[in-house]
Image 1 (cartoon, rainbow, N blue to C red):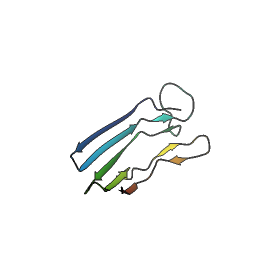
Image 2 (cartoon, rainbow, N blue to C red; image 1 turned 90 degrees about the vertical axis):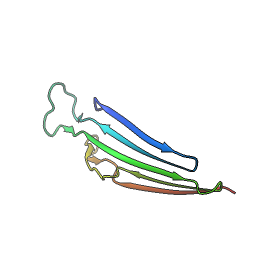
Image 3 (cartoon, one colour; image 1 turned 60 degrees about the horizontal axis):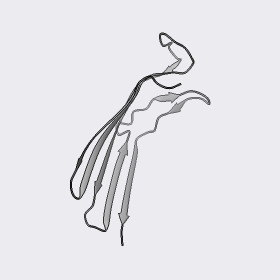
Length: 102
């Protein structure tokens, strides 16, 4: 029950006090039952691509600010139906953080 094709790609820019990165994740269609040959309708999960964006800013030596957006276009698909029913992928998620060093 693993997809034949998967890929992850990322790009980023970095300077002394900040950084930003963009990542893409592709997961190919996946069979839900052991089989070979053509895919039977209703017995596989579709392929999908999600994108993420992350940023970091350090305004001073003590402060560090972070922001990340995962699945930024809120692509919703069923990623598996086994073993306990349909499960979706991660929805749009925003994470923020602050670090302070004494």
